[in-house]
Amino acid sequence: MDIKKISFHASDRREAKDAKRSLVKKYGNHDAADADVIVALGGDGFMLHMLRRYRPLLTRGLPVYGMNKGTIGFLMNEYDEDDLPELIGSAKEAQVSPLKMLAEAAGGIFEELAFNEASLFRQTRQAAHIKISVDGRVRLDRLIADGVLLATPAGSTAYNLSAHGPVIPLGADILALTPISAFRPRRWRGALLNSKAKVVFENLDPEKRPLSATADSQEIRNVTKVSVERDETTSLTLLFNADHALDEKILREQFAT
Image (cartoon, rainbow, N blue to C red; front, side, top):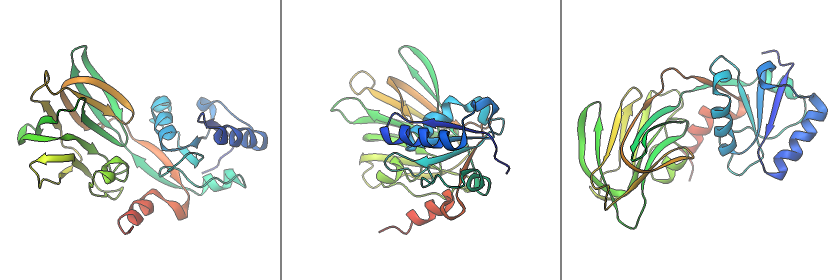
């Protein structure tokens, strides 16, 4: 990949802004619509923000290369100012597709995309009561829990892993359905689903036990029904250094102690 025009973007963190100023001084800066690559400076949250903001350009093939100037930075490469065009040009590509979440609430039906996970959470002290259907068939009549989430492979090491869900290799056509602090069924640990599965969550007691739904950081409150499936129309390209590819990061997480 021949990199000549870079579009730099930084999060609100001071470290990210300082890094952007240094990089722009060294390599110049271009509008995203005229660039060969977008370079995102920040953490994972900022990367997700960039994927949403520039989705029309990214779906046409513009790649994103992240450098960590945030906290966790799982979706980011190590920060390195030297020979950046050559470094990006030799990076490995990883294709990611988001989940499409349709949430029904009092205000209507809301659509959001999730690159990590779509989640349902209880809004009050009352545990959530949720019916779960997969591809039109009820698989769980009543989950009593703090919530439940559906994670992509790229997001399987995020909140999904914290909720004791499985780590999924990037190339696997699998989604992780993971309960959050399940009370009943007490021993249910979740399920691995085909990536083409359509999952429907229904709030069984919306008046007494209100739920909110989130697609990554986008929240919709007081939902009654949420449908989630992979957005087949969207495939975006992330770039990772050869020695820090996303699939290698996911593999390492499975052996972490």
